[in-house]
Image 1 (cartoon, rainbow, N blue to C red):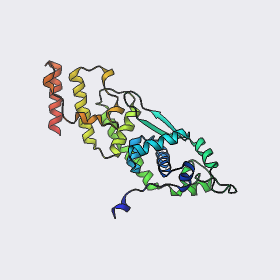
Image 2: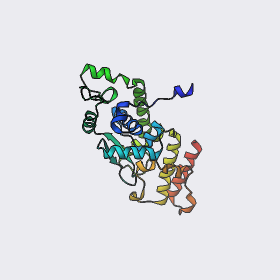
Image 3: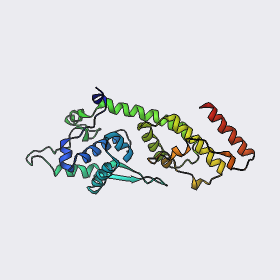
Image 4: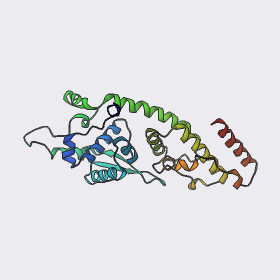
Length: 249
């Protein structure tokens, strides 16, 4: 059955009670799992992982930021998207204050995947058993593949600034199903377009913007038109490179 073959989103009832909503609990849990991989998800990642709409994810993250549970980081340059991390100390205090039974010494919600991965407490290791190890391992393997692909693309990108943000955006697009071939061709077209226009670096998109949620790379699915630029030896070489790229597709 297709429904059962799809990776599930695990939501803890304790988090729903503490955070006041199912969406907030789902978003927080996904962000925590990203953190186990050393990643910081964007809203696009969270939308893809949970199936929630952009407005639902935005409302949930705004609420979690207001609670002090999410630490948000704004991307640089033209990219105004945010990435998120969990403020563990604030989360622990909130969970302590929302115990299901005041006489119960164990705070709700601070069980299962919310325990620290490096904890030496045997009971904590047992509690973490609900985190799908296969899913985490698969994410790590895919991340490694995507990073290798990004290294190939980044060599040809015309403005090498804020590499980490560009990498995160690239990985998010690959996770969402955009092919490496499409992104690679678009980078080649974009580099040639910038060279043909002799555009200054400050007017070239940051990689995080090019690969970002607004899909700016799609503006360069087709090769640039060299006829609008005066011909010279450098231009002729670029045109030759462009034709070679097109012939290899």
